[in-house]
Image (cartoon, rainbow, N blue to C red; front, side, top):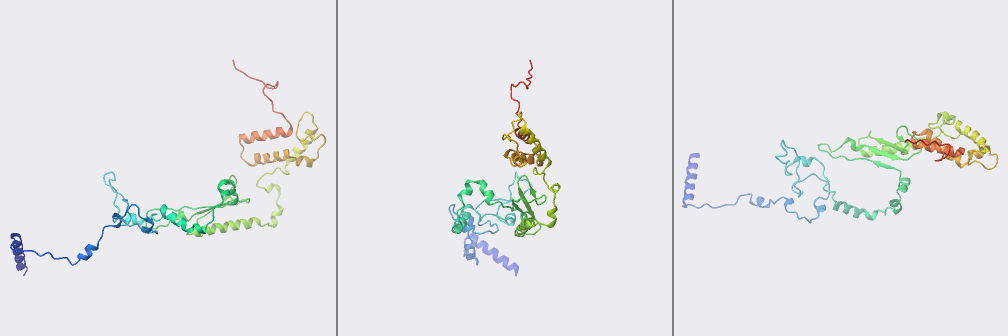
Length: 320
């Protein structure tokens, strides 16, 4: 049977080649399906189209829709062969994309919610210090994008909350910047860590306002900082200034023409200013500037004049 079909097919080919027979072209059964297949949409897009209508929301990468000649992947010799094209490239499908966050899309979203928003205060724009006083709280977080089957990143769940507080909270408080930093990363999601950070801040605030019975027994030696008020330095300074006021050679600013009391000395503005400099000099790191400022305040308070250039007490040394 197979031999007969082969002979008949061969005879038909010979007759068709010699022109004694004609071949009737017939349509394939899937002709309509083949005609309905169009070119990729990306090849028919115009440059002035509305991209927000093409890609309105977040979705996986589609090579037939995105009119960009992007490539992704690695090859042994990248200088000779470029990375793989976008057609059928699974690496482009794995990672998230931001094609729905174009400037035009963001502008549309802003215009849609603009009627629900109020104008930002002009005073806060002009005065940066006012922003720090009115909005002291700052929340920082990062979003990470990486290649992989899991779109979550453990670093993206960390929440950093800062708020200016007077009370110390261990090593979380930075005295130089006067900020309390609370970093939470125990929970799985960012929202949970944010709520936990607010809970910790609330707990710290209310616990700081509580006054325990043992706190009333606190003495001066228990303070974290040395205060000028009530210190031995203040007592010795008051005693010394009483004698300095009576000394005619010292031009101290506390001279009022007569004897001064201890309360008048402690409430004097010059003594109060010296107390602030003393606290700064004792409790903070010593620097050449702070030392010079502290020495200058002592001389001013005691009425000691600094030697001037050309005075008999100065010795000028010159080299020939």
